[in-house]
Length: 177
Image (cartoon, rainbow, N blue to C red):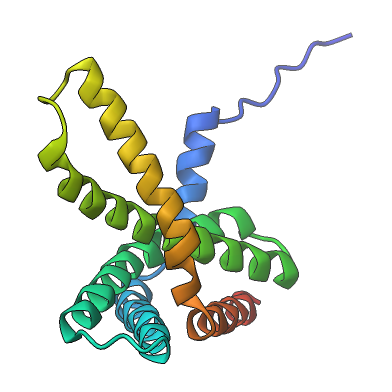
């Protein structure tokens, strides 16, 4: 009986890196997608605050900037995640991956930018940096900002942002076939 040597498989980091490379979208897709995604999410937020009857023009600019600057970096993150997860999978899985990836990335990055702005405002009343009290203030101020964004900010993605999310996911799922 002869012994055969097992075929050497590349390690997990190499396989991960290779899959990640295959998941990277073309630069043109990222560039056009970032701009379009940012414009649609900013428009979605503006439409909702306008429908709610906000009167202050400065607030319109702030809301548009927050949602636009949140959506722009979120698009490539969500797209790469979705392509990584759905590589070689069915159209249904591809749709779900794009829907979830773009949803989580957009809400997450926009919420994070909101938390940074929120933290900057309240930093005036916080202790000196890197003390124990400051650390508690940092953590709980950030958590408070994220909760506030989840309660009050996510609704600004509806209905326009949600429709765009559905259509973008459908488009990427059909394109992957």
